Image 1 (tube, one colour):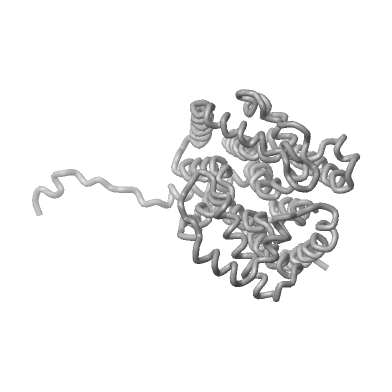
Image 2 (tube, helix red, strand yellow):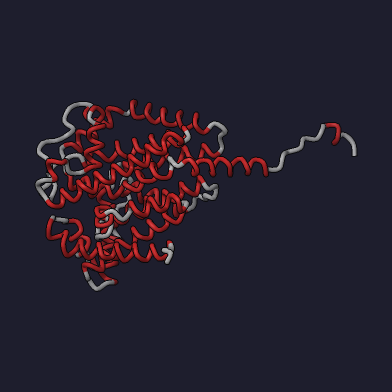
Length: 381
């Protein structure tokens, strides 16, 4: 009996629904998830009040608006499902599921099987299957990544839904935008260029120059985030990771690894959840390293550059928020992990690049050539 992708999607949905139940009955008893409880208990009246009084002023940090929007979604699901906590979780996870399937269907089955296996890992599944901002962010990220795939398939059409997605992504995760802008911008412009590798290198170098010019602003933001160490759940590490001027740059390599891994080996020995998270993170890291190392020798230079700069921008942007708390790091990883998977699994694939360039070459060959008539042809009739 052959397993079809349609059957896999059905299984994935059931699996994620089971995670919604498990999260409600087990995880919430092992650790405090205050915001989930809040989103599950938004009544219809409060949701309506929030919807009619949203503060739509654009600022550099819009966490308040993101919380209000998530509460509105929670209120809608709570009203539809009669206040059932598990069903509210399933409503949220369905949003993420829709995005995941959209992304999986957009890529070639060779790459799809890798992504399909990775999106079933426990921490991603649980944190994107409860009433929280994470399922909404996963949906938004998947829409963006599908659009990037469409660019490389030469079938993209930037529409209202993409503009709305980018706006919402800014509301929820403004620090994701450097990676997203770089990925979309380079991909679109490189399609029109005969020297995509040079273009990718120039774009990446320019982004580093911008970061250097904004170093003091970035440093101040990093120091501000560094004092946010006391979070619910009892997992906060003592002290702050970013304390001195320019620590956000000096400690970036260590911080990126810590924020990706979550618990350290020492911390994993103290709590069951930390142990499970550490084992999963280590396995995930080994799989991604093995995959990338086996493909790097044959990866086009363009693919390597775009993948590397995308990874840098997403990991550099997220690490200050997760480095002080291993539990928070694992949860926040749910928001950006699909970008990381995409950069490694899809962008480094040689066939993905060759199909793109060959399609562009065929398009140029099929394009009718303009014929210039001599001027004297129009001198007389």
